[in-house]
Length: 230
Image 1 (cartoon, one colour):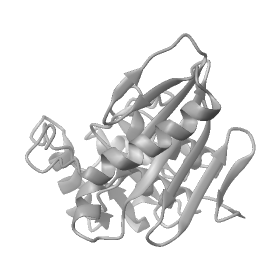
Image 2 (cartoon, rainbow, N blue to C red):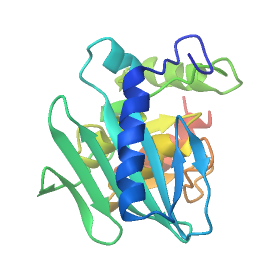
Image 3 (cartoon, rainbow, N blue to C red):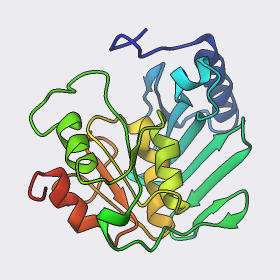
């Protein structure tokens, strides 16, 4: 376990991370690496790989087929590439900045829903800070009391990819790390969506709050999340 009672780390997490890092090191021995299990392997390189070897570890450990490997490449502080792969259902999402996003080679585009009340949303709950003021539970209650369907899959990277694919119209979460969102947020942007923090400022994966939508419901969702609408 890591932080939180059910925040598991398995042998598979370590094995996957070891294989990914070895592959990167063989091709790019001087690149900076940030990975969930091993932390920072800092260098002076402008190239940084951000890795989550298994996003959705609890799902993986329980045989639930919603888990993935997430890898992003940051160049001079800008996320330029993201790849997310769910080997169980063989879905490979890929995004390159300025060149679009794809699923198994087919272009992705976000949904066209324009009303929060008719949208299908997805979220995640952190292992701590659930009861913070206007936090995850307050926001969740605000949506479901108005009949807005909100799903909780257990993998932020997949949540973001499914927004990019138009399966969900919006995703929000209160406490993510860079390896959770770096690849997925680029996927949403390159599929035509919008990603910000909870103030509406441009999203950085190095801060914890994220709202990713199809763009059309974004401003309204900010109001819902911040308690300005109910």
